[in-house]
Image (cartoon, rainbow, N blue to C red; front, side, top):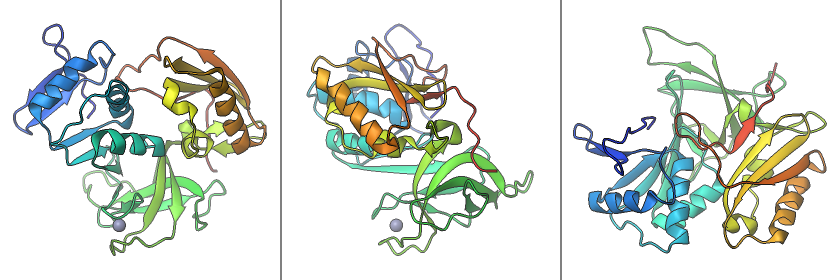
Length: 298
Ligand SMILES: [Zn+2]
């Protein structure tokens, strides 16, 4: 998942792992120029599953959609991890790849594991792997529907270095709903990423990216090639946009008014139009660069 493929020779952005039978594609070189090569290679490989960062799969999916490229008929599911999967990404993947999308939550400290089932998009927490508590900003366990809290977990599998009530720094959204699949696991409605992925309004309220942008329906999104939010001061937000050729002047107004409808004027929003959004060193595409230190809870 986290590997960067060093091109063995020019124009080759993947490597085959014969032990796991995986074709590993670099998320670092996914430019419009290189993507046709990726797509040809994936077609030749004919995979059953895609597994990867949602941000990287989004780049591939958008390119396929924009260029009306055939989907990959061998695909049974798209498996997403290591980053939150936002609703618009799920819709895009379903539309482009014509199969179910699953997301899971886990991390290298191995204290918690949660994933989706075939009946819902909530994360089922596996209590035999680790005990998960969701702790709100007030320091108390969250029991209110749709309220966010920090995931605090006790792993049950690491006997060499047990972590007890480990504060993961990840934000989850609570639900007490039961899942139609009948598995009686505690559920998280969503995982929102790190607390550092939250946005601060003028009145110091913390807002998730899902609430601010991704749970809303934007017509403009289909005409935005890439987007990145940058927060440098409380109550301020810079929206960087790489336009597609269909981007319209009214699209900026739509994005602005939907953001304002969520925060009620709590953010001063500026727009900046750029040619590309730089990736991180590990090849990740980040929706939010949060430059403020975010402290969630006590
Ligand atoms: Zn279920």
